[in-house]
Image (tube, rainbow, N blue to C red; front, top):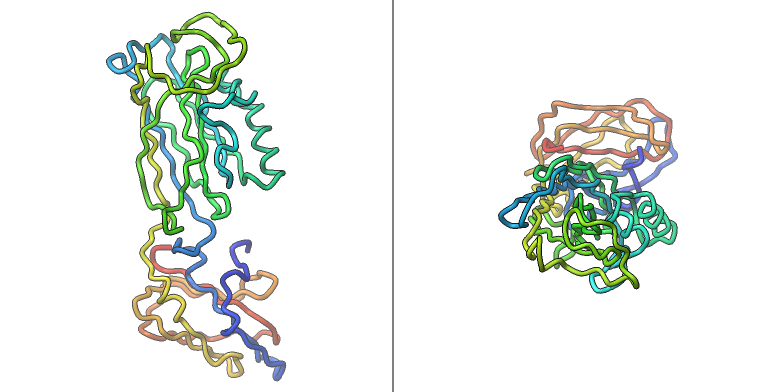
Length: 311
C-alpha cells in the first residue's frame, strides 16, 4: 500500500463522526495516484539507446565492437557525476577504460546518502556495434528529475557516450512525454590512445572530459536516446479534483461519488487506515454519479481509491 499517501488527500472531504458502529469517514484518493499530471511526484519512463556505430560515420568498426552496460542515476543537482571540461572521477574513468561500473556505483550510492541522488540505474549492455539498450519502467521522482547515463565504447582507450543531467521536466514543471536526444562520443581524458584498439597509454596528468571531434569518430553522433513517458497524460486533473463523496461521514451503509462526467472509472477500492483492502469493485458502469455499498466495518477513517480505464 505504498502508493496511498496523504499527499493526495483533500482534507476538506474528510470527516469523522464517532456515532454508531457503521459510521465512518471517507477520504477520496483520486486518479492522481496513477495519472502523471502536472503535480504528480513519481512517474515511469522507458529509455532506449539506439547505437548507429558504423564505418561510414566512424571510420571503421573494430572486431568485437560492443557497448558496456548503460549505467547512471537520477538526481537533483546538475553535473553531479561528470561534466565536460572537468576531470573524470574514478568511477567514470573505470567505465570509460574498462567498462567497470563498481566505482561509479559507489559514487552514486554516496550521492544517494547525501540526498543528491535517488537511485542507481543499472541498464543492459549490448554485444554488437548496433542495436538497442532498453531501460524499462524507470521510476523518476519529481525531486530528482535529472538523468545521467554512461556507457563505454568498446574497444576504445577511454571513450564513452554520456547523457549528462538531462531533465525530464519541461519548462512549466510538468513531465515530458517523449523526446529523442542525439548521443555523442567523449574522451574521458585518462588514456592517450588515438584509435579503437590503441595500447594502454596513461595520460599524465589527466585531462578534462571532452567531446571527440577528430578521427576516428569525426564528431558524428553514435546513436540516439529515446525517452518515453510510460503512463498516458490523458486525464484532466481539474476534473478529478471535482469528484466528491457524500454523505461523509457515512451512516447508512452507502456513499455516493459525484462529478464523474468525463472520467471512466474501471476499479474502485476501499482501504482502512493501515492499508488493508476491504472492498473492490470492477467493470463499473456509471454516469455522473456512482453509488457504493460500504461493508459493515468499525468507526474510523477509510480511503477510496479510483483507477480509470487507462490504468
